Length: 301
Image (tube, rainbow, N blue to C red; front, side, top):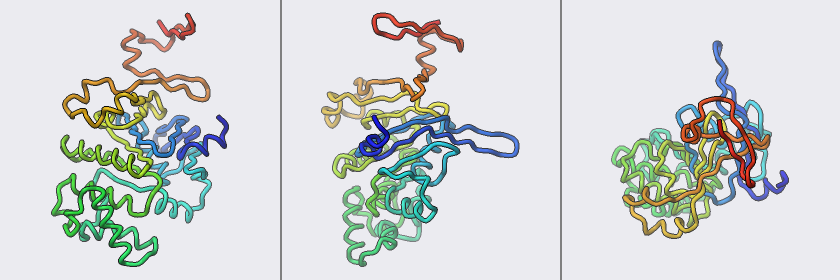
């Protein structure tokens, strides 16, 4: 696929992202040539251990951090060729953010309705239009009955639903969620996961969720595993599972084989094998034997 075709077909293209954090005493390599493409309208979960680089990736997509080297293209535009003024506009209009901590999402002294209206003041329009749109978004996220409540009067799950409505206020092309279920119980987590799926299906919205919550794999079409600053594996939801997803209960979701797993080969033809694969194959050395048999690549000790 040519570069122009990649940018046309995908809302997000990450090309060779490297991020190095420097202090006086140490350098930390957070991303190591990460490559990623996400199509328009995808619902994606990015999963990895603490320190794997997944939050750094999310911050770059959101225009909050710049790579040491590499490029990010969003909606066909080279994100970090933008001026600072253009990046501010990008963060206001192209991406919506939902953070784990509600204090980052909501103003405590505003009601739910006023919180959703707040971002719209910078987008123009009259007061009546903002009010009506805020009500529609609260209804869409199933929290319109709390329109006149303050954050302190709502549960964690209710606050997150309001936060999602706030993130949708300026009609973003990408919704970014950083550990959105990290501070709620499992029942509320499932409700929020179902809400993301609803928004993805009904609005055609591209949603990227960074999470430690492995259960999200059962609800999203694509799971991206980040390890040591690179994409190691991806899991793609099976079509038959997708068709029956609404009929499955929380109890039996884990009992059904939902996704097919793939290791990722980068542009230099390098494949990163997971620790689980290496352990199952009994490989405990950095040298392996590679051979081709019957059209298959065999890796062994």
